[in-house]
Length: 198
View (cartoon, rainbow, N blue to C red):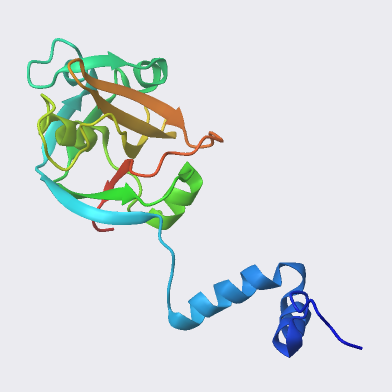
């Protein structure tokens, strides 16, 4: 018998692949090959660091306000005002904050897992410090082109939120907070702030 269509003939390697990995054999084999090469796909790419000094007392109500002359704020979302608007942090130590760019769209649990539990959260005071360094929308490590800059921060009840700030050209910084269990993904190119070291 002569076979004219060979596209469905997978040969011994294909059969072995099916036996070892089952229905998702092709994907599993690709993952295995990457593992053999020591390649790990990462969501985050390090783009730089922000060095921040210590702060004795940080009062969010005095910093995250449109009356702040150091930072041009455009608006604050309901979640941010409700959960962070009156937050006070004391004795915030000096810290180096790492800034990462998302290499592909991802949800908070995936991002937080890659950052690790020791590095993923920062203080509200540190997030503010990064914003103040670019308070009028000047260039720096934070994106000022409409893309969000995200940080995982505990609110007044010690619940972690994804706090985000984006610069609206001509208007100023827009700040809000989203639940880390939201089904929505952050877009590729957005940035994430985290502690540089554990």
